[in-house]
Amino acid sequence: MRIRQRNLAWLSVLAALIGLVFLSGAASVQVMAVLLAVWIGALVASVLEVKPTAMLQNVRSSPLKRMRMSTEAREATERAQRRSGGPIYKDTSLIDIGLISSHSSPEGMVMRKSRTISGDDDGVRPFITLLVEPSAAERHATLRFEIIDHRGQQQYVHEMKTYLRDGEMNILADHHLPLVTNEMIGQGGEWDLRVTIDGGLAGLLSFNVTPSLYQRENSMARARLEDRIEEEDEVPLSLEDLMRSQRRDSRGGNR
Image 1: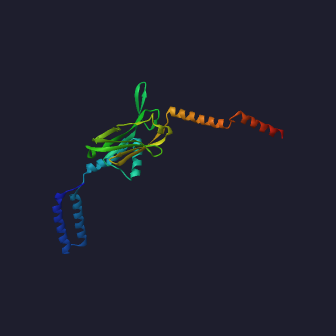
Image 2: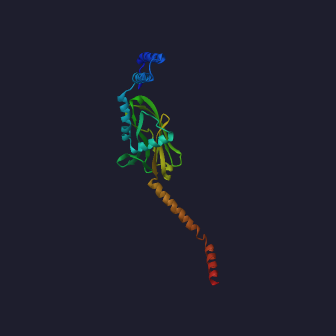
Image 3: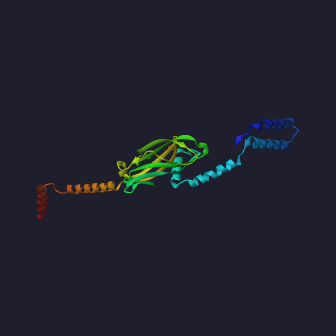
């Protein structure tokens, strides 16, 4: 809706005529009520211009956007809205979010979208897919990706400038989080991916982290070594201690 300034003049004249009728006292209460209703109707019809097509498009666009959103995007958007108190952007919608992990193999580099990352992977990059309306396009936006571990500590922070275009945009972070050499991966747990656009929280997605096969085997070997040390601590450390223990047992048996 927008104000139609060209109709204000004749509406003012109409209001003046109705005011004269009211002041004259010649009209009944019913007639004055009808005149007032007519003037209010003319005001609504003439001053405010309603665009049915635009209203219908807005009504239809919301369900269609939600149908295009992935499960991860819906979850991330709802968590972000609960955290921030409401939607961040009306004309920019998050329709997908996640992680792209990479792994070297004899066939070459293998990349996959996953909600579980492992220390066996070489690295991981966050990504988002945006649906940008024409009203929000043709501008630069600052995207910030953060990966938070199970202790609440930042393991990855990356900011990048992106030029928003009208329509659907797939945006992959420029840098990756190394996994093979990352000791924190060995602890595993549930981590969070946090995405902000121009300082506003757009998505918050949880994902699982598992140790590499080497880290799991190393952890099991360390546990076995600790158990062996505990068992050795219970055995006498010298022959003298062993003989003394046997003599005590023998005297106890003769009594």
